[in-house]
Length: 232
Length: 253
Image (cartoon, rainbow over all chains, first blue to last red; front, side, top):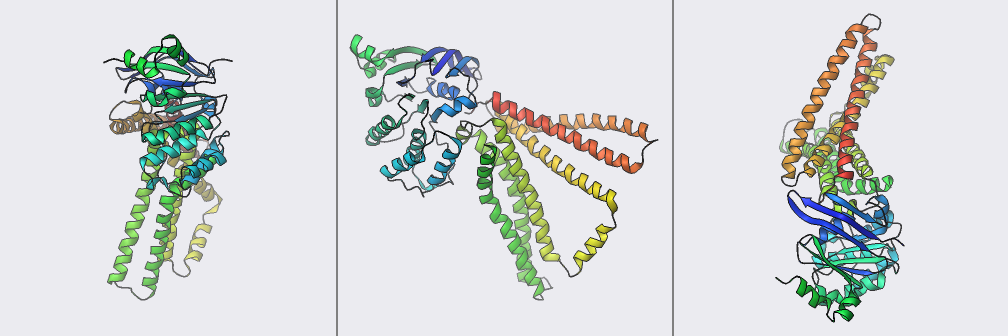
């Protein structure tokens, strides 16, 4: 089967400022991939390009062999690094919204996760804390049976105790044949679930490797390797 | 998908606008009761109710306008755009759903304003007068009225799409997006005026040349039809521009 995500000499500039420069990579299906890099390295830019929220300055990005369009949007489940939900809806209305637009959305899964996190579906987003909103977004995103999950900083805003729960939620809910790409700089927290890593720095790919290779052949943890590669 | 977008668009805007519409009708009713109760002079109660009525009326039109702009900007070009543009929906459907709902609310606000005026000013026998008055117009007047309604709707669409296109142009710029939107508005509007002037001159030449074999009435109707066609073309151009930017040049911050 073809790669789920491919970049060919992909570049993105904002004005004169390059955010991604000449990125070429392939992500195979059925893996959990860490997109790792310091703040401002271009992680979010890459994910937004895959979602069609940004237009490439040069090069191409392909999802399942297609440039981002309505068909790729059907198979991507995206968790942005910000709150993208309006604040006046109630949680159950947003679930209805997702069910209406995504054929692969499973409302029963969402209600089940809400219950386990003790979030009331009748609550309005306006009254929720930032952390709770992030949990609601993650629940929505993980209640889809997508081919590609793009999670931008899914654990950035929550406390360490909630992190484990969220990682557990991600692991136990994703579509088994799907691919997950998680962007973060909190490596030690997610290291144990990753199959493959992409290190990205100042808009360029610094390293791609399977995690087994790093552990077995180099005898290092991903965290240690990261510190080595990105030494200041 | 368009029907679903429309459903959510109506829900998102109606929650702000419907209470305003209802309160205008309510205050109109109260004013009417106060008048009816013999408060003919400008006593305090009547004065307050009339002032409140005028304020709500003004607020209703301002809010309809603000909601039109805000829904496009906030829902598509700000954080909420992250959700809207990752839905499996073609960008033109977003534009159409927002355009239609804005137009509906603008028309409804005009109707609500008229109804509220009738509530306040209705006198017995007024309808009969209206009917006798319009009955004397004849079929040509009916066609003219039809043309005027169509041209009003087309102009409304053109106005809304002009504002959408301006915001889309503003979105192309990295900084000072609001300023760029205003600049976009001025440029687009000026261009449209120039093209409109050329079109009118052209029409004038045709008009003069055909003056020999067509009656004035037919010519007038034809002139309005041409104007409608022209404004429809302008709307299509604004729409195409907005759609191109949202589909091919999207860069959400």
